[in-house]
Length: 354
Image (tube, rainbow, N blue to C red):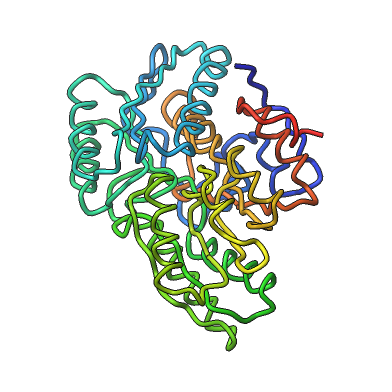
């Protein structure tokens, strides 16, 4: 799989900043990893001591069945290879993601990783309440923990990398309001009810909707985070509430399948969703989802591994919060985005590349 960090996305400052600028060595300084802006103090690279020769990073994402986490894995493994060459420290990725979301299983895998010699742990938390104790135990035993995508802010993790989820929810609603003229009956597709990042996104949608008197929120619809379950929940909601004319999807789960392309009428229903991976691009092309808000999910792995290496190998200070910006993708920049996905190692249908 061809990997390169060259960015074709120079037309947008948001993605241009994803060129991996090194982490600041000044406490409280703004982070520039992946268009980030730290709002909390930095953490010292001294915790756990520097690992000069070998560094084993256990990665525990939410679910192996969600394509966004597979892209994070590709990014993590690419960063490990690059940084092994540049630092002369042998960096390996130990992937321990459950097949399905389960916070208790994640907690068990944190403990297993510690017992089996992990030097650091990187996790996207399915349920912060269920993993916080395990994170704290790992840190107390000298294994630093970093979170990405979905945080455990009350834990002893040293850093978080991901979107500001409340802002992401607001952005979804604002884009949908533009498409629907500031009115309509809107449903929220909400994923896992226990995931703290998704809870914040749902709240962001509701908060933004309050600014549009013509918009009515029909309901929040939760589901297992698989394309099939999400698609089924959309159609269940549509059958029960045929007045729905807009979907605020805080994750792109059903768009990884093709069924909604046939089951929904693009002239009657509009979707705005978070994520814009190759399988979802057909929804832009057809006009059913005129706007997708892309998370550079490759960077969940790539940037996070770099921050761990900054802390543990290079002894740099790492900001506690490292913000990832969403990138608006529509027909006007679909080709550029598709080529960026290709550069990150994704297989992208040729029709989107030119």
